Image 1 (tube, rainbow, N blue to C red):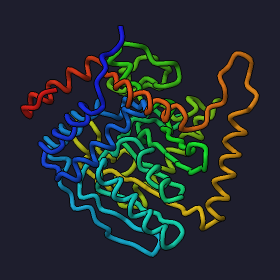
Image 2 (cartoon, rainbow, N blue to C red):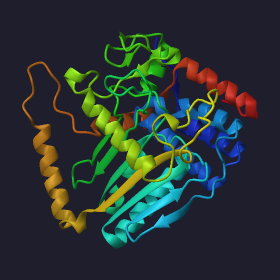
Image 3 (cartoon, one colour):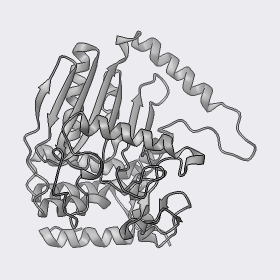
Image 4 (cartoon, helix red, strand yellow):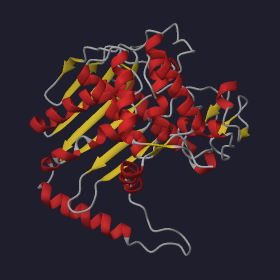
Length: 359
C-alpha cells in the first residue's frame, strides 16, 4: 500500500499558516516554510513537514522564540558569532549563512558560528545558499545527544550533520549532506512509523549490544557513529561528530555534548547548561579567491563527468554524484506531489485542529 500523495503547494500553505499562528513574522514564516518543505522535496522526509508538530510542541513549552532578534554579537572582517535569540533554527540558520556570504564577498571567505538556536532542518539548504554567488558553502550543526562514542554506552553526541555545496558550470552542483552517524535519527523515526526493523549497525542497546529495534533509543540505547563499529571505522565517525560539536558549540558558546537540549518537547533540557541553545557553524568561500570562477567550474564539470563515467562493478548502478538523488527527487515531487506516511498525515490533522486550520 502506497502512502497518500499531497501537492507541494497545499503542504506549503498549511505549514506557512501554522508558523504564522505561533507568532512568526510573515517573512520568517515564509523562510521557515521554505526550509522545512525543501527537505520533503529532496526526499529527506525525516526533516520535512513531519517535524512541524515537533517545532510547535517546543513553542508550546516556551523553548522556541517565534519572533527572534537574530544578531551578531562578535565579529572580525571574515568571522562572526550569531545569537539566534532562541528562534527556530529554520530561520536563524539562513540568516547566519547570509552573514557568512556577505563576509566572503568582502574578505574571500566568511565563517559564522551560532549559539542560542534550535533544530535547523536539512544542512544542505543552508550550504546551497552559497551556490548562486559562485561560492562553496558549508553547514553543520550539533544536535540532541543520542550517539555513543566508539567503545561507550553513554549518549554524548548528536547525529551532527555536515553539508558541503560546490558549484559547477554545465553540470549540477556537487551537494553532499550527511549525518555523522551510520543513519540519522529521522530514519529510525520512519522505521518506527512503518513498524520495520533497523539494519544491524544503526543502533545499540543500553549495554552496547547490537540491535535492530528502531525504538532502542527510547529505552536507553544509542545511535552509532558512522562506520558502525571499530573494525569498520566508527572511530572516524566519532571524530567527524566531535568536530561538528566543537565547531558548532564550543566555538560559539552553545551547549555541546550531553548538554545539548533535546528536540522532543517531553524531555526537559539539562539543568546545568554549559552554553545557550543549540549551535551551528557555516562557511562561505568565494571560488575566485582561489582561482577564476569560470575556470574552477569548468574543471568541476570535468571532475563530475569523469566520475559519472567510472566503470562500475558488474550488476551495480552507475556512480552517483552527491546531490544527484535529491535533485531528481525534487523535480519528481514538484510535479507529482509529496508522499506522507499516514501517521504523519494524522499528526498534521491534529495540529490543524489545534489552530483551527484545515489539513
